[in-house]
Image 1: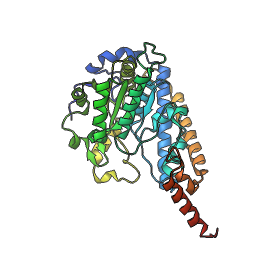
Image 2: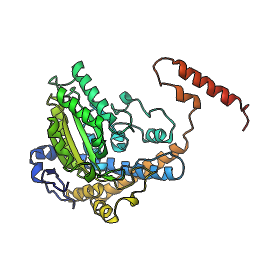
Image 3: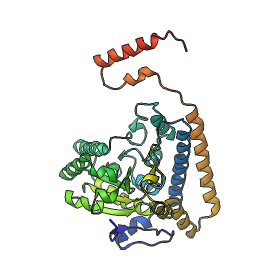
Image 4: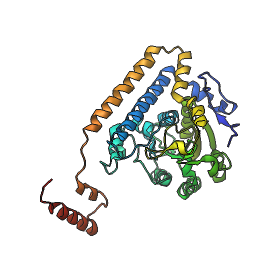
Length: 371
């Protein structure tokens, strides 16, 4: 797992321009990114981190049932998420808060979902084709592959018009690579040459199981066994993530078939708020990855390109304002009516659910409205 010969990186860990040999074919794509765009990427990352930290506080204070932090994975998500076009469809796991936000999902919708207040969170077609969070590990890879096959059948991809051709991108973690669903999705994607990018965020831990125990070889190499390209990218380098993901999304839209991108990153926080990472990982390991913070790296790089401290201060202020707004609106959320749990389970009325809803109504009425 330590072999990084093929690692694609543009910006070094110290914030300097330091492309690796494997990055050569993506240099033109990276070079086309302006300083203004990179400042925008940093703003996305700052706002997501501020939201992430505030959500953690809200959970500890009893306002959320669970929180799933994305702290440390912002570059992997923003670089790839910003590379997608409006017509593309995104299938997340449950940690892709940064991607959700740039696709137009209200962050409070994420908190409402994790608070238990909604049945899904948002309507994908109204939120940048960003589909619902999936907590069943790896199942979203099959959903995405089926959707990509549908795009082929509908003729909405590989038409020769890059302005309208569609692609599908699905996010999953290193733990999901050990699931049957993910491997089946890769098989179908390769067989049907779907217009799809598999975006693997390798954050090195599947809850408490290290990636080394799941795979004796780097995960990106598995792609070759399915008959598709596989590349490994420094997931803490937002520019490399943007250039590489954009390249393979363009390829998918043009009919070139699926590809797998392994983003090497790290989960700085816990797996969820119910997890205690001190039980299974060392402080030394955590410190080594904290030093590679994607936000710090991009700030250093932008400083070298002449961006002033006033810009960074402004972005931090935007993050603080977003966090305050999220807290205010989360505290205003109300609990759903119990009967709403029966809605939208089936497309048509179902006798079993009708009976259960009636039982619940009778049970609540038995209390006579008293406290």
